[in-house]
Length: 267
Image (cartoon, rainbow, N blue to C red):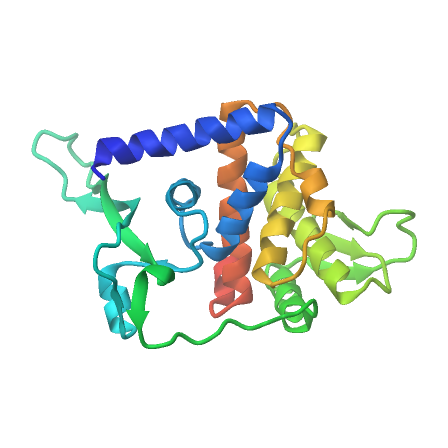
C-alpha cells in the first residue's frame, strides 16, 4: 500500500465512522476504542488504520521487532499499513533562525501476531473481573498528578465527581466499578478543567470513552454502561476527529502512568 492509498483508507475510515455515528450506532466507536485499548501507544489515526485493515488484530509490530522476539512473518502475509514520522534537517531557503526540523510521514507496514510463527509470547495478565492491581496503579496515576482522591457519602445518586484538583468517589463501590468511575473522573480532570465552554454531553462522552479504553486495558467486562454513553452526539466529522484524538491521547497518557513509566502523567 502506497502513501496515497493509505491516506485514502484513513479518510474513508473516519468518514464511515462518522456516518455510522450519525445513524445512531455505537458499534463502530466501541470497536475503535477496543482497538485503542490494545494499541494505546499508536496515534488515533494509526489506530483507525489498523482497525480498518485488520479489525481482529491483537498485537502488531514491524518485521524487525518480531524477529527480535523470536517470531517471523509467515510467507504470503500482507502487512498493515500505518504512517511513521520522518524528521529532516531544514532546507536551504528556510527562514533565518528557524532551526526546527521538518517532519513528514511515510507508509510503513506492521504485522499482527496471528501473521507470525515462532517463539511463544508471554500471556497477558488475566484480570477476570478483579482490577485490584490496576486500581492501585490508577490511584497512583491520580496522585502523581497532584490530584486529591477522597471518598464521600454525600454525592447523592452520583458515583463520583471531578472538582478541579480533587476527585470524590462514593464509598463501598465494587473494585470494578470504582476503577471505571475513577477513570472517568480522571479523564475529566485531564481533559476538561481548561475547556470551560465545552458542551456537557460531549465532555461526558469523552470521559466515558476514556473509561471504556481503560476498562478494556484492565481486562474487565464493560457491560452496556459504556456503550450507552458512547454516542458522539451528531456525527460531525470535525467534532469526531477532535474527540477521538483527545480520547486516544488521554487514555495513552493514563496507561503510561499506570505502567512502567509513571512519570509520564507528571510530565
